[in-house]
Image 1 (tube, rainbow, N blue to C red):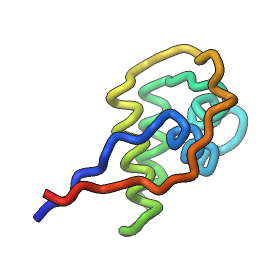
Image 2 (image 1 turned 180 degrees about the vertical axis):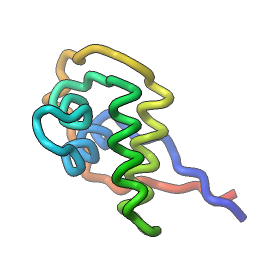
Image 3 (image 1 turned 180 degrees about the horizontal axis):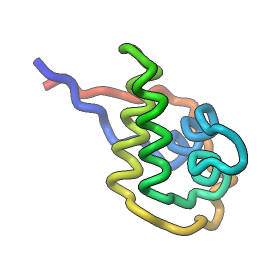
Image 4 (image 1 turned 120 degrees about the horizontal axis):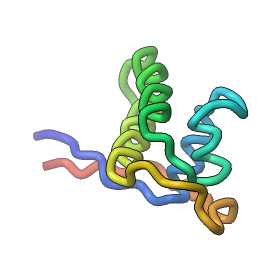
Length: 95
């Protein structure tokens, strides 16, 4: 049986990015504050954080955020982004 991370919502992406950003100059901060995605920079920042983690819910959230940005791709700031927030946990489908 393998586990597949379900696609997260915009609100979950914003929350996770806000928990992991490295300050105002980071790509995760840009994602958290405006919804803009600089794909290469965001994925580099996520990879650096994942490298330091073992297993568990926190790692699952970062993997889900990576899947979200890969699927969404590069994009500019999003209107209404600041109103989005989703505290629900990242879900997993077991197949």
